[in-house]
Length: 139
Image 1: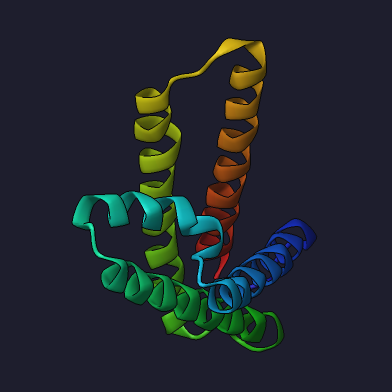
Image 2: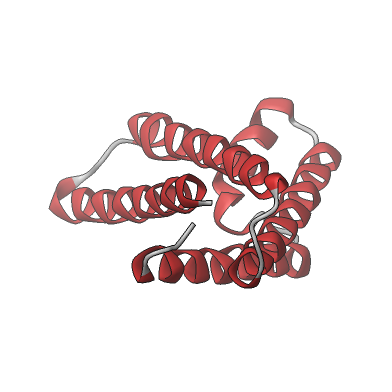
């Protein structure tokens, strides 16, 4: 299937996003952009060992997804790419629910600056979700 230039650019952006998040997650022992979700889960289970395992698993998954997306730019997209993208779509929706809705309503939004910061974060998360959906739909 012929891809549009916009979808190709979104896929390149997702490749960089996932690869950098994965490398950052492994180097800094954080889950990259999904770190708030890991922090939330760590507070629930109260175990640093479990959170470390989750961080490493997420970072490795980000690297694998980024690698397959990169391969998909140059070859026919393997079927596993759709599965990986669906997993990341679900993870990203969970991220939005936990961080942008539950986390925000627990801590609250204070003033105009807080509202603008919240909307900026929410829009960035929604852009990533939209890119994941578009690239998954076109592959």
